[in-house]
Image (cartoon, rainbow, N blue to C red):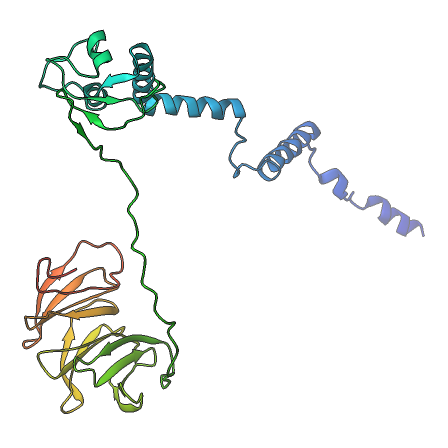
Length: 327
């Protein structure tokens, strides 16, 4: 037992974790926690993404400043004309309106005080002045005419600005649905009618072109060849050709005598949305998602022009014989 106690007494002292831990500055630690807490509250509790609440006084002052800057000259001119009209019998020279709106102009001399008292009573202008016009806010008894009075007493009707009148459509019996034609497996994107009104063609999202009899509505033919939705169809009035535009960036020319593709037109960088044939020349125009319109020669399959300028998708295009030939 004594040996064991001696060994235990000579054992080296072991440092506890509490003694090896460095001292922490509690004041610095507390200030850091409070600072982080304040920043967290400032970020998440305060709604910085919302606009500041507008004070009614500030908003009213902003409106007044904007009205004075943009409409101040017009308001001053109107107030001045009202004062003049009330002071001299509610009749104002027409030139003063033009001078206030467009500045001083050259022409007949104008008097600074307007019309003389005699001419105002007689209803005629002086020899040096031009036509006069009654002020709209006139309150003089008997001053109800809105005609333009010239120096010699001749009256001309005023051009009153009115809203354009829409023509009233003629009544016709309500249209009735006569037939529903189905056959596509997706949306029908385009349709065109043959010039002789014998048949019509439709193109859809199912990549198919279907030709239907116009009188009976029966399916006559189905053309396949596109690998994406068909967005445009046109039948030529000069040749037995059917042109189709698709989202697969191609335009195809179909020979209706053999029911097969005879020409391919490549050049668009994205989907082709519409096409239009020129009525007098063997060319056609296409447009699409690449923001350009392209002019093609039907016979040589060559691109003639690239009509740029758009910054987004060109959804439709039309051709006509007169200027402008492409719209």
